Length: 306
Ligand code: 13P
Ligand code: SF4
Image 1 (tube, rainbow, N blue to C red):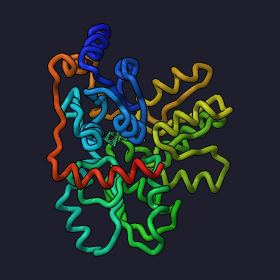
Image 2 (cartoon, rainbow, N blue to C red; image 1 turned 135 degrees about the vertical axis):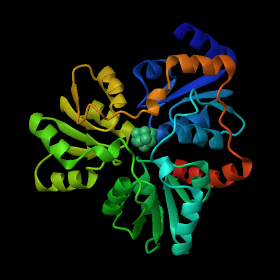
Image 3 (cartoon, rainbow, N blue to C red; image 1 turned 30 degrees about the vertical axis):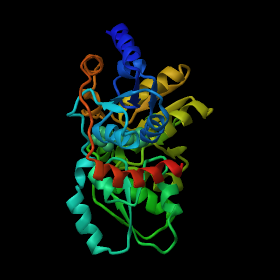
Image 4 (spheres, helix red, strand yellow; image 1 turned 90 degrees about the vertical axis):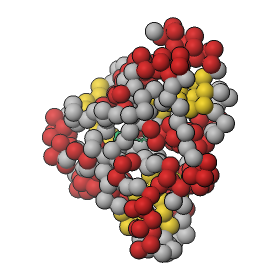
């Protein structure tokens, strides 16, 4: 199957992009594996005619908006995101009406329609920088993740209203899960994704007793695992990330905070479906032109501020 995927990839002049949460075997056949920002950057610079996007729908949609002239395929159309479903364009328009003049910062985990209603798009790796780039004194609406929103608000001390959305995988991480794991692995460094339900408590924890903690995007976590002198890490995010961590750091140990931290949407993409995508040019991601044009402005700002 892998040989056939690679043959068809050449024949179609395709590139395979995969998110850090993808199944190990899918990550292993990809040309690039990364976080939301990295994948968008790769889509922006690829010379390929076809992008096979091994991730969830909003990520493939973002690639299509960046490269409208390319064919963007997602191996399974049902690979959605519970966080992106937390707010739609009608709800955002109503929220904007309540706060006229506010600047809208949307996390990349949103639909194209929501991005089209936004001023800035951000990912977990540049959310703080994007908010810092907005003139001081401006009211800001941040959506849809409340834990990332709380983290950004704490870091920037800005006037931010936060939409009460959450990701079903990350919201489940509790402060107790973290303290239990750190008690079990006291020499470990703690790496936390800012979508986690324990984020604000982790910030407090690191101030009150010496936990070596970093709140990072998935790619930031992978970088940290490589660069740190520490040999053990406790990981609070979706467990697919551990494939690359282990592969790239065979001498280090990685412990998940929760064995259940699995995103069922990310895991819908299989090698068989990737092969089907390349064979039958399925399933093509389409974004209406008007929506794409509006959404592109907020995405471009995301790509400019890194
Ligand atoms: P990253 O951009 O950090 O990879 O996060 C994307 C995501 O969906 C996290 O759940
Ligand atoms: Fe969406 Fe959560 Fe899955 Fe990330 S882990 S893709 S936020 S449902």
